[in-house]
Amino acid sequence: MRLTRIYTRTGDDGTTRLAHGEQVAKNCSRVAAYGTVDELNAQLGVAATIELCPVLQRAVLHLQNQLFDLGADVATPREVSVEFEVPRIENTHVAELERLIDRLNAELQPLENFVLPGGSAGAAALHVARTVCRRAERDLVLLAAEADVGAALAYLNRLSDALFVMARFENQASSTPEPLWQPGDGCGWGDDSGGAGEGSGTN
Image (tube, rainbow, N blue to C red; front, side):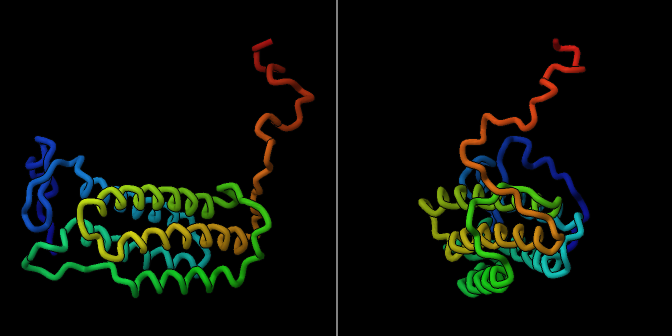
């Protein structure tokens, strides 16, 4: 593939063309779904810049390539014919994610409480990716009500689980304690001995 021109002006009216040439609105369910998949891929790119542990760094690059395939899959309706081979997400990709989850989870301490998104910078970035993945899944559910999405929905469901385990794994690899949910602590703001207004000019 060779891209010689970045802007085309063809989408200035709020429409875009799918891979097989059909013109659709940019806010249609299909475009929304692969747009969120693209956002997820970009968030994984952010996570990769934080220098994750080697196991996760390799996994993220692999997942970014798969998400590009997923974007092409979602962008091309399964019932149409195109002149090129479209990469499709299959059940084998879902099984691969399950193996990754099992392999990483086997090295983690069992969960005894809910964890808050955070810890190390890398884990926090992976948690953000997890939430974007959940949104991509919700967008794809809307598309699945209209069209066949194959194994893509199961893939995103499993990927969000994988990203949760990856975030926990990164905290462990960087020796960063996991922040745990403290139920009912929403009104506690830590040591209040100084007062919120002390030294702030708000007294």
